Image (cartoon, rainbow, N blue to C red; front, side, top):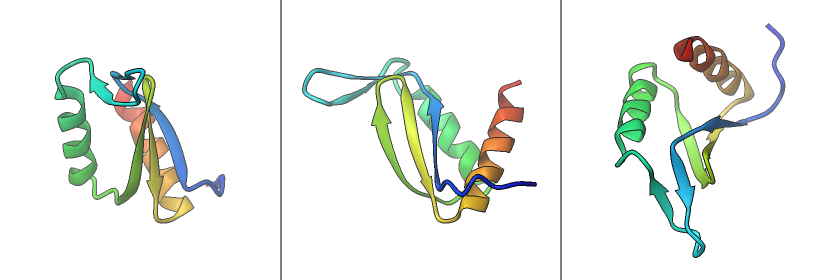
Length: 78
């Protein structure tokens, strides 16, 4: 498996930013609770995350973990 070397990944999320940069979950946070529970269950160590408009930017400790997350998350969405 070839790694990209990136430690961050952006994923789609039901979130929007207001004009004063406050993050608002469009589904009252249900998606976030499910997502972070799934991450804990699969033992992904997210070191930081940033709210973007319609996306979350996730940072991981290593590029390998970021790649593994991307592969597992892609198969989860199918």
